[in-house]
Length: 454
Image 1: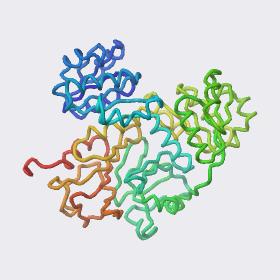
Image 2 (image 1 turned 60 degrees about the vertical axis):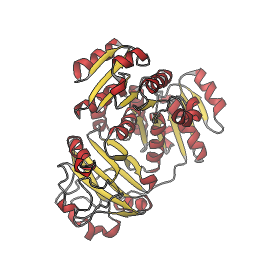
Image 3 (image 1 turned 180 degrees about the vertical axis):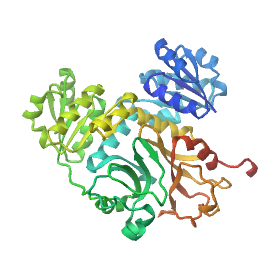
Image 4 (image 1 turned 45 degrees about the horizontal axis):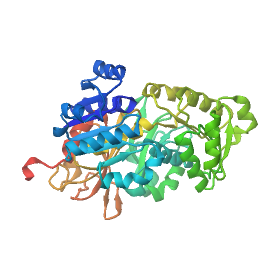
């Protein structure tokens, strides 16, 4: 598979790193010579220092025999023009564009149906807002997402010593917790992702990911000792695009919201956009402001400025004031391994959201969603089982799933099935799988149609 990436920033770099590690042929185009040099020195990809929206450059890069064009620069306009030129030169190339400005939102459908015929429009900031809204509602969760149009959820929970599941082998879960038991898809222990087997136990300090039907989530959280509490008031630090979108959604949800924004002009703008949200001009890291606004009494403090360091500092300050539900936006991937050790666990990242959206389109087989977790060391994959692939019409215990992968559930005619060794995947079933990074390539082959089928 050949992929051209226009944009060598954080998103472009990390998706190039991911795809090149899976032996995809990757070409990255950017005008920033330093960004291109960074890619060339660290990754096995081809690089071009030029504008990815220039038709001559796209032709020289081989757009006409390219499977996918990813336009992920920081400029919406450059991304749109890159897709436009690609569509004119090579209409069969699949096109994905990152478009963040909300002013373009009403035109997304036209961008897809008309020129430039963009196959997928990615707005990672919208995904971040949706993730934050889910995290706010589950105080004990450090990660949460949905499959099957919201019918199935995955949740990441940090296990403490009071959790009733500590010390119990997974094979004993049915006896202990009956039909409402969670399916543990992954255990993160000492920064390593473990795909569990029946003999594994949940231990204090583990970060575990489980999957369940959305309608059973509240009961399952109670098994972990977690009770969902209503969110009444929220403090947002940062009034940028994410903060604005978030506040508008909280207004619709009836949640009392305050935004702290350092730029006075942005404050004036926000005050014209909001109906009930209180706009405060000031430094979010100012402890005096926190005390004056009773930040410690907030049900949640959400730090979404464009500065990672500010977001980390404010989150720690809020925790020190007694706020248990803090959510931190992080852009730089280098910070991720350090955050858990300083007590910051509810983290959202536009970069990770963008990569998940892109991977869904790149994966072979009928992949419906692809969600990376824990510094991209693991992935949840939602797909349609294809007739004559390597997984249909066989007992699961007869299928050689790659080491480090797990079938999480089967969805058939609206019914959620927790699989056993005697389960059979039928053609057109929806399936959800979990896999560590090293198992993805083999799992991808298992999901695709065998050549002999034709």
